[in-house]
Length: 377
Image 1 (cartoon, rainbow, N blue to C red):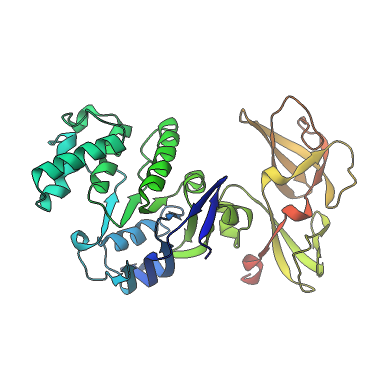
Image 2 (cartoon, helix red, strand yellow; image 1 turned 135 degrees about the horizontal axis):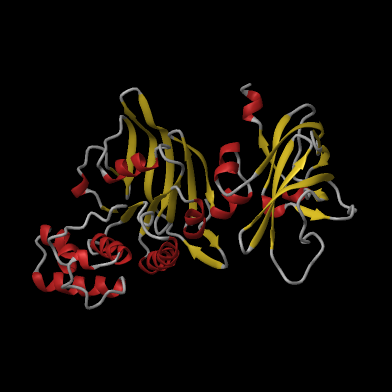
């Protein structure tokens, strides 16, 4: 793994040391396997997300790191020390929960100071840390408020402050934004990113929201049925999915079964397609071609471009910023997204219901995925 990762246009340099290492971690509940042999490394100062649908094992994995669940096998190392068998309160981590888990009978200051008092920290230092935490979460002057007098976003900030004042090596966040409305969630994403970057603490963030993971993370581990399907930087996981599940779960993707007729040419139900120069297949190899809806191009007149074929506009979904076209080509359905814009450019025209269009799948935008579905058939 490289020390430099890119998130948008910002260059982030991570620590050289591994903050958390999981080795062959497995957890069963009766006959059901929640986590199946997961191994991964998370670097110091990294914003790392565990992403997947409900029941994929991501929260169970987080709870094992926190110490709330013990693995059936495998090791959890935090700062190089094995944590299996170590109770939660002795681990150098703190957890922010989805439901805030604040004490309703305490003030904001009381909630923030709870862990510090349990450690028998001197009162002047506790007061100093409370003031620091309130400034950190943009709630100075709220120390005497009751938690039931706060909004959902403010309560989530208090829960975050309560975890951070204990100066954990690793902060665990279990879907902390999912209970908030969309606008507030988007605002807190940015605040959480900036906060993590300022403090330099390793964040492990659990979410089922693909956009949330893409916006906030340095790297993402996509989980499915208790296993990690792919780990990588956000751009890598989105642009180059390695499995059909990742292609479908991260954003939207069109998956087209194909059979190689030459190293860089395949046969599909839509016609013969050429692939990018980096792809090289063996004769007869069965694969899936993945292409994101926004990377498909539409034309009224036949373009002088490879991988062009005819299709009919079957449906149009207007989202405000985009037109989403449902295209039918024979028995194959494809989704194409185009931005709404005043200046019309080739490949970005607006089209009507039932209109016949030319569809182009640019070779450099096609991602070749092993067709495990055909392999297992």
